[in-house]
Image 1: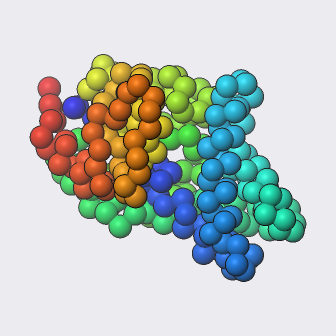
Image 2: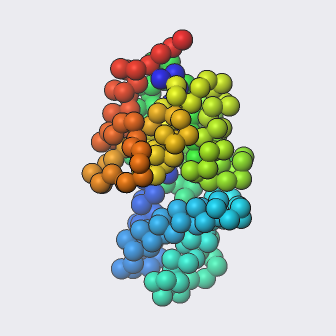
Length: 226
């Protein structure tokens, strides 16, 4: 390993932290909104990538929310949808994120974010959380107008670091992302916080860890500074 690329949503930032605001706006439905919204969001990225109908992640996120509210038979004005979608610019980082990024930075490990999110969403998250000081670059799927697991997204990390994909570790709490990285040729660490079962896609993540602290342990054991 010579560099680490972190997924953002669900890996560094808790996408389900939107539940609190959703519950305030739609009492009794916060959990259902958060879960349905995330599921549709991922589904929409895949559908758009497969069809070649790209829209930025900020647009996809808003459309997924609108469909989720309709599915739950919840009435929402355009202003309501904008306000709730804005929560994606203030997601809560997981508790261990800062110490992990600090530890890797102290070890001299190059760190980037490799995300489906466009910069309008990611930049405020990093700045508000103060995590931007540890991140060398934000590599956004918006640059190639396709979403993970499209190989062009993972190629962004290879182009940035100018090293073979096998020397890049992709850390993601989304198992499908960790598998996509393996298909591309990177090593990957699946951050399996909830103890989910493995997918059956003919390939597995290179490593499975319980939280991001496990990534630090992996890098300590495998880092090659050359």
